[in-house]
Length: 294
Image (cartoon, rainbow, N blue to C red; front, side, top):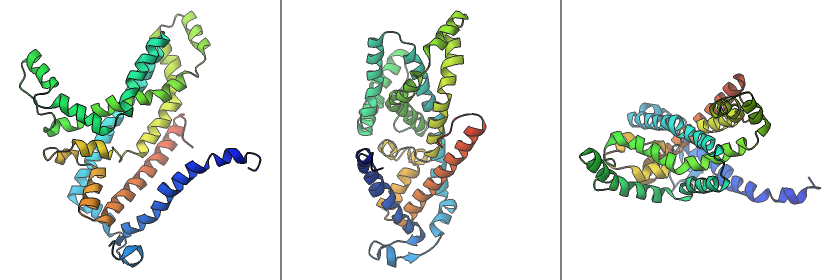
């Protein structure tokens, strides 16, 4: 450690970040077991044990919010997660380096826009007199659709926005994995008469298997975390029934209703479920021959 002391010094900013913003705040989880009052503080608030955790499973609203969260997370894994893989495979087949760089820059760009901008663009496009409804009316003679107020459209729109914003950025890891494939494998396959689709199926996808497993495991760890900012900006009184998820529910209960203890209990519950899913998915991945994160 002394020989490489300057390299270890480079770790200090990262360690300081995690200690200050990740580990120290964990002490605040104690209020999940209290009827916390800001006026009495951590030491003098009444201890109630598992009261708030029992409420999570007894409150019908919590059950509905939990279902919304799981269902939306499942949709994102099913539809948004594979898009990055498909996009990486398509970019990998592009032979013109200039064209490839231009396409990469275009699909990466939405990642650097905030959700406020993304939702703003979506609202302009999808409002009753927006361009989408005008096109539907001009081409198919359809009446305007209330995309932003109709509860049936809420989750599909959320998934489409995630695909639009994050799919391009997600291709970076897969393209990095693809760059490590030995070109001689493709040459040998071409000599044996394998088409491009056969080469993708037998060479490219197997090379991506471990990366896909690792990213899927990490995604399962945040299955109860579907993003606060996007959902909060999309919510309206008409879509609250299907759109209120754990993140927004914790905000409404913890900040607006000042129920800090219950909100903390829900947050701790999310963390425990995420840990269990990561450990379970990691074991299953290793059992079926895939790579794990540890």
